Image 1 (cartoon, rainbow, N blue to C red):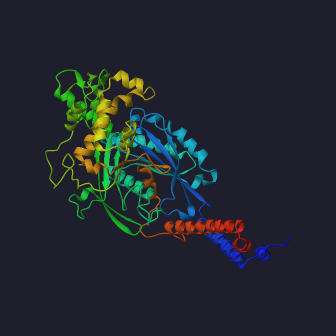
Image 2: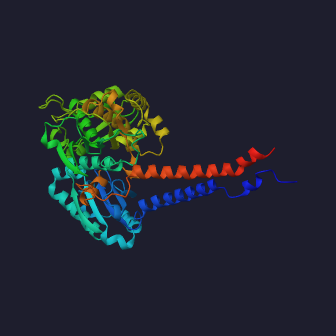
Image 3: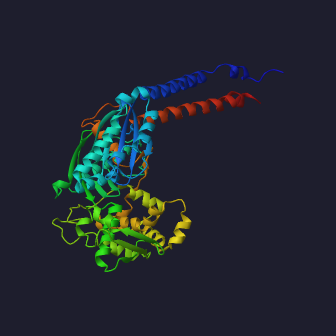
Length: 506
């Protein structure tokens, strides 16, 4: 049987297939070229940095890593490991200074394993001590110096490039936390999120930082008003060619642990008995407090009226409303020499925009599963938790340490009081608070910002840039990929259903 007319022509190599094949090859080459050019030097050489966060209640060691060729580019520094040091914060070794370096060795030994041996001599190590050591320095400056010296002696014994141990000011702690979260979110330079798509997390521009530790709390943000009434609460940064005027203030003695001491002191002053009924602890909970603890802290010692050798018996009542009322008494809101204040006569411009709340802000709210809930639901969660009997709470959370578990009611109520009443986050503004544990692989906190500042990795002027911006890179990759897929689909369809056969076969 003769072949259908036109079949021979169909078998021949049609020019349009040659054109499609050529375009396909060009698209694939372009895809590979863009990818290789953009990332050619990304992994050739790695650098490392180690920062120890010596907080009031514990110490954490962080290891950071970044490509040496792009060390000035936003978002390239990543946290690769965190190690929690056993025991209390270094300020807890005031009575046994010789032991302060021992628990650090486990985490430092781990750092030796994780950082390549050839990188040890060039890897910087920093230790920053925060509010716990600030309080110890107020209590006994000589002891604080001895603690830091003992820590330095331990850290110098390792093969890294030790860069010193120092006590950060509260304002530095707040500012470095602000730098960290905005650096990780890409807010100082162009974000990797394409401009033509809506941002799904934060609005454009920088966001504020809310930090809560055991002995202090910090608030830092770029206010709407250009001139701030309190120069002492102002910090200026030049980051990637842009000027930032930041409001930052640290409230020493108003971290969650010291705030609890302040509240208990207020209870002691108001009570004529050595036994008090505390609404911030669960019903059925009991604790014996040595007054000596209040006598030691510079936050409470000046107002102690009871003998330091006496004891205070605490019995839980589990009442959120009464707890909130008792917490309000630790803030002085009577005197304000400015147009607006937070508390204790401290200037606070109106809060606006998005805020990242981390450290204890996040841990407490995450425990209550309230990190993404509106203000009304947060209040209900705290109320319900505080009203539960102590035995029920222990049964629901058997793996949580009793000290932490017993204080979540107070901590959550304190957080709500601080944010809503003292910082003036209204119901609408509360929606702008994002409780952050991590951003990507890195913890939200001051340590990364501290290292970036000390290693000059955030320059004043625009530094090295890649051949393409991230948005252009993503766009080109998408176009080339779509073109490759389309050409393959068209070629497949054309091969399976030739038009010439459809026209000529009778």
